[in-house]
Length: 124
Length: 373
Image (cartoon, rainbow over all chains, first blue to last red; front, top):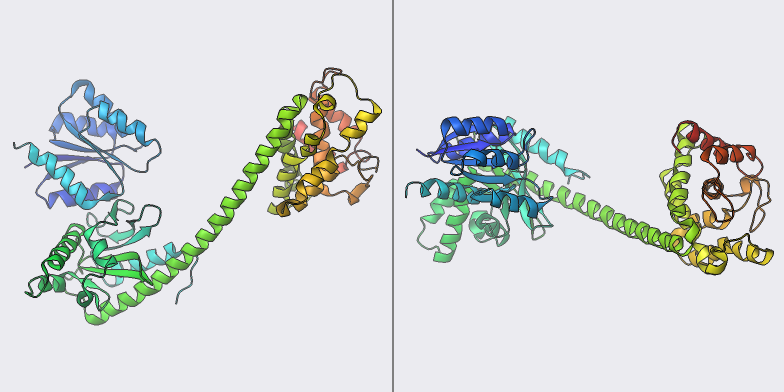
């Protein structure tokens, strides 16, 4: 089974996303912050990480930055809320090799498509 | 019909009721966002994991479910006002559906599957799709009865009206607000034009404006005066524009290095009236006009242009007069050095009751004592 890590500081989001992907036969792990995410990634080696940008503590971009110091391969999809400095974050994430960049509020079928595409890509 | 200014409360209440009383696994409402022509799940309740977090999900205008409701693609299915998953699935098996309609219905139902809803109730205002109530399965697993569905449809239509009304109120307030902001910005630009023309008073207008407002606030704070929002606004505008009349004064006089002769003094003293001439045609500025016209009057009647005395002088003008004098004293001129703030405050206190209105002079001194100026 593919392994997905969901990183978001809102419990509602973690719960919903967990349920959503479990129904699609994906193994789901969650983290509520950047530091927790980094240690989980190292320990569990998920196939894909859904990383929220706006979080308390270290934000998503900082988390990705730290991850990329040692880990160039773990696939990460960035999730952002509102769009204040759109251009800037998008470029930063691109430079840090994020696989994709999606905005909340999300179209659920887009979420499903984007994630499942990355997870099934592994098999080939 | 429910008349509500903020329908959010109403919607939250209804969704909560749906989930708790009707015992649904989850429910929510997708609301139309006009700026992006998209529908966002703004209110949502339900059990852990099933409830879609508010603000997390959206449907764009091209979403199959939205298109289905906007185009009212199947009158039969929507005849009762609700799209029920089971019924719609059955309809798909009918042979007499056109292939186009069949695909559209299939796509719409797929959306329902992703969101895990069993019933969708669209809410319209005339022909505009305002939102969609989404309802998950009942905890018991049972289907909704016809009377339950009718009840939800009735509520949905009331909610649509309430949302529409609230939207109209909000739009109206926004329009008014927009006009106000444009107006203030134009005023500030005008004021900047004056400052640009008169070299020695660079920044003077903004300093006088800040100080005037601080003084007014101090008076309110110490319960010396009761000013409303409108007064403060007019004070703001008047202080921004108090020297606008200087646009009519030749720069040779305004920027003269030495002291002014009689003739030149008389010219400069025209500026309040010139200001009035400039602003008179503008309806919104009539109150502020008083501040512009009379900011050189003196409490004891020794000022200009009319030599008004004491409380005949509009209060806005009295405030600006003190702020203006204070700033003039504390600014360098080529022919005299600036006073310190200390000295300027003392000077104003000295003439409290004669040149300056006493409570205003007191407020200025108080602000100085508190280190605010």
